Image (cartoon, rainbow, N blue to C red; front, side, top):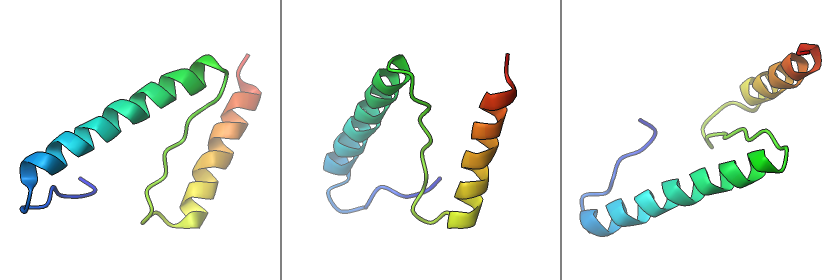
Length: 65
């Protein structure tokens, strides 16, 4: 897990975070429908690792029929 729901105002945070997840999934669907590949990156991920992952995805797309 990448985070924890705060103990203070727990119910409010659960509702808010659920809304964020729903919004992000809807955004993913809309972007995919428009031909985009969505890549989510966590703020704590090393930029080099993210760049390697994106490059692998781009290269994979180039070799697919």
